[in-house]
Image (cartoon, rainbow, N blue to C red; front, side):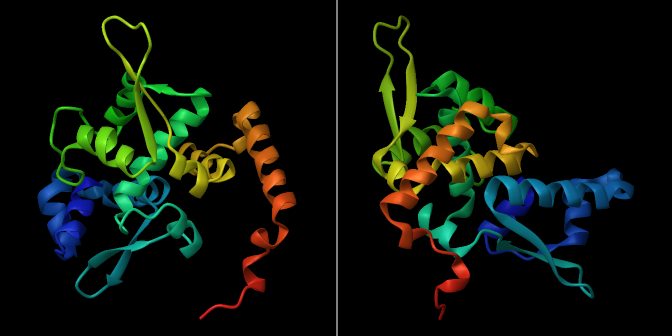
Length: 216
């Protein structure tokens, strides 16, 4: 997964023979399964689709899998991997109920191969990204836990996240990532339904079906 993301970020051609040579290696007989799982994670976490663009040369490319409206709401300079990372953190905060301790956030991010003090080939300085850049963009709030010794910090939704991302979008994201029904988180799902209902009542025209909106 990271190999494909880095290749795309560097504007390099993603060739299947290169994937076999550089990553898959002796596991070639399981390549279909590996590619299928890679595609699944890219779609669920980063909103990207791994597409075979040339059967002759076995060339792949990454394309955006999210709808344009969803991209607009969570756009971070069109850097899709950043969007997936942000949604993962916002989802954790939402499931926790109020805020998420920094240690809990890193426990989740380690599953994705991200470390707080290790520079990443796609995200660069991950700790700086989530504690400074996302905070400056008002997607996250990063605050010290009162009276905690040794010092601890926790993350909250920022004002921009609250304006641009709905709770139902978070529930749908969680359902895609964990392959579960949104009702697997009953209290959070009820809260998301209540917010969606309130939004519809406040501005019914803002939630009309996409098919009724003229497109360019």
